Length: 307
Ligand SMILES: NC(=O)c1ccc[n+]([C@@H]2O[C@H](COP(=O)([O-])OP(=O)(O)OC[C@H]3O[C@@H](n4cnc5c(N)ncnc54)[C@H](OP(=O)(O)O)[C@@H]3O)[C@@H](O)[C@H]2O)c1
Image (cartoon, rainbow, N blue to C red; front, side):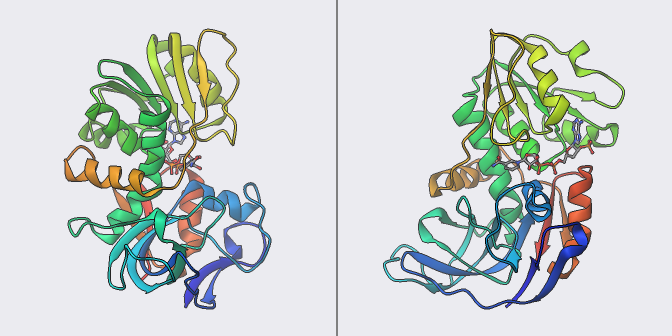
């Protein structure tokens, strides 16, 4: 099969495109012929050696995808060859920048016909992460106010729509060029972080969801009301420590399972969330896709059209 892989850690130019051995379905697994796979911020961090220890090179990156089941391992009874499915790889597993992947059947779900493979791949890890952060971790309630940092990104775009669906008021941050898009997906208030310090104009939030990290994450505590809670996904494995004692800092656990993927499907089917804006690439263009992902200034998701 064809795949995009790395032979060693380094800049985007270490990404290669070429032949790799076909995977085989072990007991409990299926092989999926991948149609579309998405680029996530984690991918370039892994490529650079900043995240995940890689035991063996060549190493195929990529954490989420959509495709068609092409083989079924022993003991798998709920999926068949020909089923259209999408999934997020298990924690510690990657390999979606490829024409085929072997994956545990239990963490894969059926793709509805109404959703394209590109949209399903774009929604998978971003949607899973947003649901785990906003619903499972922050437990956002109707009538609450949430600040979602980095509104134009893939995770935040899903989170904004989910928060609105739950009945919350949503404030978000983005460059001016993305404000029209954010209004379209329902943000109530949008702050251009390039010209306005959000800590000066936002206060008394019930919750913060930070997808930016660094200094933005640390300064986000200032906008919370006493008893407020903040969730962080771009600050590594631990949430940053607040400098005040009357708020909580949380690091969502983003587990892989079928019910969360089914929640994505249900939210899209209900019209609560629409798929993000997608920039498409061929797998052979992985270097260009990584350069843009690493710039952290684009809207929505970057998706490989694999076949
Ligand atoms: N399981 C997990 O824990 C998990 C899962 C998925 C993602 N993540 C992490 O979550 C983060 C977000 O990922 P993502 O894929 O949604 O987006 P991303 O690709 O990391 O970020 C892109 C967006 O960030 C915005 N941005 C950059 N700097 C900003 C700032 N200072 N203030 C506000 N917005 C800013 C950009 O908008 P502008 O162009 O408007 O600046 C752009 O739309 C990444 O660090 C990723 O690794 C974690």
